[in-house]
Length: 123
Image (cartoon, rainbow, N blue to C red):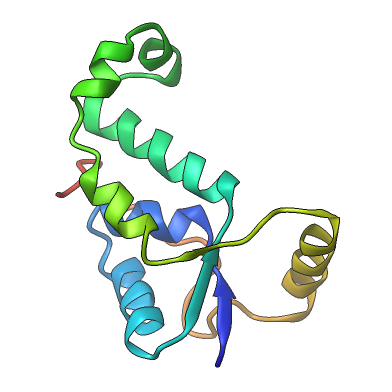
């Protein structure tokens, strides 16, 4: 079984409605591929989701916990639950760094997915 470490960019772009990011995630799920994320990816995705959903900066969200509590977080939690969590340690960091140097992420797509013109998240 193939496995992939999924970057937060793909997850955030999917939540924003980017069809290319959605295609990548669907391929991972449909092809029975093991998708992995770590706590850093999960944290980035959650905070970026909160930022775009509320239209507030990270600093403003930190000062207004009631605003964070009022956001419907199920879409982001459901998305993250599709992946296995990988502990970040020195071995994983070293392996991932060398892996990025020697492999192509996706031959038909650049490493970073371009943002759609709309910044509104769906769901």
